[in-house]
Length: 341
Image (tube, rainbow, N blue to C red; front, side):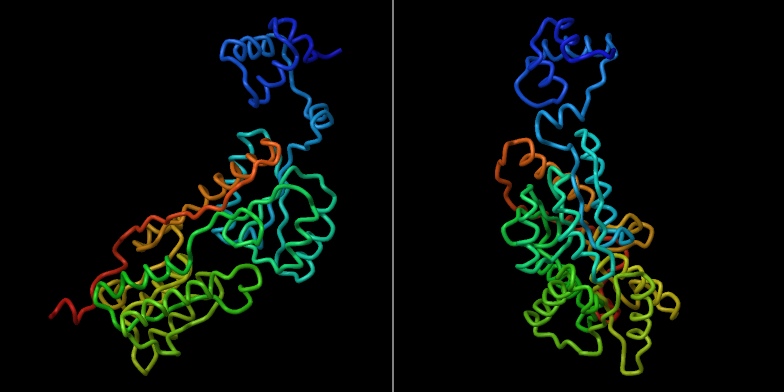
């Protein structure tokens, strides 16, 4: 017969309730009592039964994470941070990848989540309709969003409009007037409004500075290095003149722009300055100026927000905004004309 929580309590000289609080890390337990419980558990070789604790508490110690794709750097980085925080807290993770199939998202909302095998849900970069929000609320579990605003749900995000405006203003402040923007196509609006928000931030900064925006310099592609490479190559090789700077809606798109410039024999930043948003791990290798939004930290913080609700008996969580760190590297500089003046 295995060692029980009663055996640990008798060995430590404390109540079973104290043992439960000490081992779970929840509730008020003195440091001395906690040490006695941990020593007794180690001595007896006690392993907590999560099945038993789940039956007693009504919790599964399982958190769902719902996101559009695991192949994108931002999503996978948020997932990495969330996974780390859940592992440290002793929770399992169930991943719901809505993917690019139209029916996947509907299946997750209408079927899997309603099975209620979760203590809570983390929704990453999902722009949900009012009907989809209603479906999500039917789960009757705490929900925290990351990156995409969800009505009635605490969300952790950056202000994409303001960050995009700040990125464009950096280029304008260096003296650039001919600035292009590389962003996502309409299909990316299905899951998150990032492309529109960052495009509007770019346009607002240009308008405030009294600068013209050429329609041909608003390039739309996917959020990949290869997609941005092709779009940027067309921009920079245009017979009608090329921009002196490019603001890319993501770091991976900025990498594509840098590679396109180099393949065309252009020097970065001497011939064209390039800036992105994200804080990608490869940013230093490319010398990319960017706004680092620390996605792994976002994942960890969102998990703490969610577990605060799960373990706090329904404690209300409040939305928060991440302030990205502006990182200046070698990919941006004043245009040649401004340096000669």
